[in-house]
Image (cartoon, rainbow, N blue to C red; front, side, top):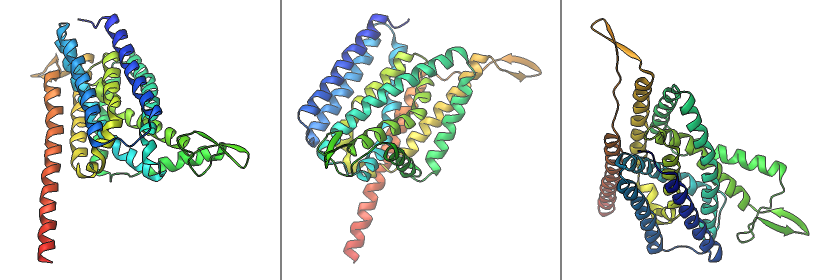
Length: 333
């Protein structure tokens, strides 16, 4: 069944109000969130996503519910990977920790606007050019291979430096922060603060990651509403996840391999889907048979969950083994 328009509009209105309320709380009381506060917010947004999936299911649309959960988990795992770069940006521009919540929230809102436009473009391409799945699939497989073999952070500093150079060339930007303000006055001259660079860096960097993640979700569902909903739910809890994980990000050493496997799997799924949609035949005993395998959404969900769990558990085991080796070395020393 098709998702009712009233449900799509109502869901987006409610989620937008929640997002704006969250932003208002940050602007009213900028602070460094505690681990407990961050955990509660992450739990709230995860529960909200699961409730959304249950409502879809209760509407008699189990297939769309599974598609949403698969897309949301994929986007969430990719978003966790994004946090590594966000940490680099915050460190590079020496953003005061007190204002990092606001930076992340504004960057997320910018990213959502840009992603909405990207999703509409992707939906239009899929609607008119079914062969675009071949390109999406090949790109995801390429991205997966690149993520496995490229060292973490390669190219990130160059991208950020390029953004800084362009902004500083055309806009007067002061070197010091003035609280969370975007504009300040220095010697009677109005100037922008480094905060504007951070906002742009977060938003643009997230859009770069969206070039990978949005085609991946289109490989799970071709419903633009579900693609955007998966992005929205994943990004809504990203700010709290940033503070909750903190230094733990460096310990998830194998997460990138799990994410790479997910991307490669969905890339292969997109390729098979393209063969199926375009009815590309293969030769069977001299006869042309219109056939191509279709990977079910349940299979996709299982692969995504298994990839996240295996990579996370493997990281924890490796960290535990490393701690034991270090402790043993200290004793021997």
